[in-house]
Image (cartoon, rainbow, N blue to C red; front, side):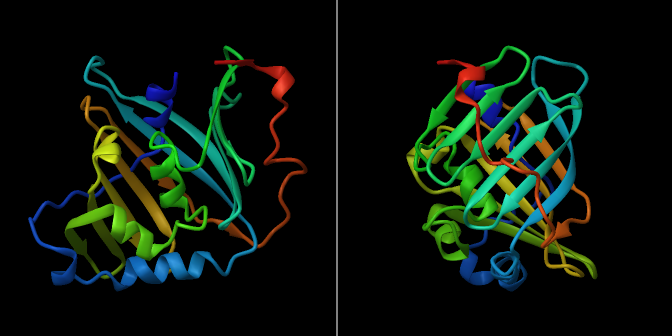
Length: 216
């Protein structure tokens, strides 16, 4: 389950110029990470498109992300929900809501670390940490959008992903689109609507009822 589930967390805007991070403008991405830390809570609706080599048509889904920046998140797909990922501050839980099966991971596990880095979770999750874990292979910029293409540096991350692209709105400084490309050729694009910031979140949204699942 974990391999296909990790595929869920990815996004788009492509640019492979073969240049180093020192040669490109990374200020919009840095600003986005810094601003996210100032929010007490985030709720955002998302749309996801998953392209698999074995399928002729992409798999499309909608869902929600609830986030306490730097502390916890719940990423949920489907209505009714079919898959969820939850970080409660200690562990990451990957939940198959249809089969009622689940796995748990340490936040530093290579299978879930890219997701935590992307969402700014954990002590090591920051713009600086992102630059330690990824090389910038290129950027694109328009009047309203900025996108940075990133490739993993370490062998551990390379076994999970080939490239991650983060697209930032220059109007809101919020990440609005992600593309994640895996070694098997799968590409997952996640697009985020305008987020609801600093509002109240559902009770126990970051808790997992462990008795409701079969654990792998």
